Length: 434
Image (cartoon, rainbow, N blue to C red; front, side):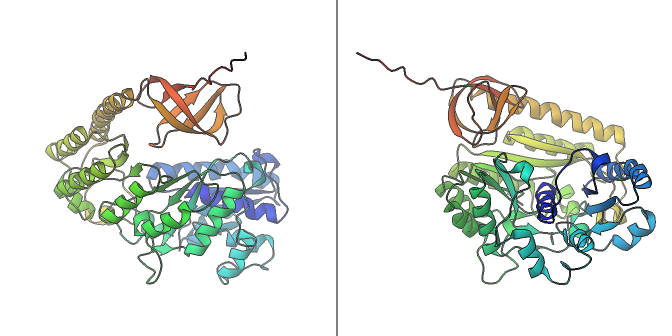
């Protein structure tokens, strides 16, 4: 989501005549877009702000814009007192305060959302920043802002506000615009993406939105994240199965494998519910890959409760597991009502156990690809090798002197590891002249 927000800021600044520089000392405007989903991310943001302070002292005309979850939907006033050298504070997904500052108030996004939408989209088209035009193959498109589910460990609802679905016309228009600029893959974003449309009485749900986007010419692949087990229904499974451009890769966080811990997290399902859902997905999409999120060391989590999570991960053999150690976040229900009684050392031990298990699982899954032919969408060249992804989101590297950017090409997998694979291009048959 922050990547998508940053693209919009870059685009809007270029509309005002600015150009990009990767050297802070050369900049007239510095935008620091922040994430505070974990305490370490917030600490990092404060550290980065401190490093920018000398630049402001040296150049008083420099404009520093703090944006994102660190500001939140209601946090600007307190931060102004704490960070007097910051000029502009922008809530998540809202470049309006910066644009208003630069135009002396000619554009007021907070007062007139339609004016800002037109300014940023320019005839309903999102124009990518110049540095990304013709180079960006995969782009992110937000479809749901905020979240109203409020898991007890999560700060996002308090920072990004209540759940708001974007108008379907804006989304499809943006996808069409991206396709015209060379983007071949789009990922629809939402804190709970499969709740898209639930706050709009007469609009499509996520399955309906996928069908509309599937018709956009030029888009080869469609993905979406992040899903929630409570809202991932059979209609969505059927839609993925029916639409060839919707990739068979699903982000489906379980967070924990013990029912009591899940209840304390306010997740709304049991581990058996999750197992049954994975079973239904695999029955309809046998070649689908599934990724999950897991938090270890949640307040009160016992050794046996952790082992329940270990067993779920061992049994289901998912393609990816994004692991995190629980950290206290001021303002969340867990911080207010629960005691963080699992030591840092124990959290790390549990983290390592799951990490080692998942590395073994993914290594075994990826090994099945050895010698197989798969279609890869290539995005960029990194250290002399082309980098791309399979439909199931496996990372693949290929050596080739050809320009593969933006192409979907069949390759043969020659090596597999737990985190990536190597492949060779299919050999073209030789021409025989008589």
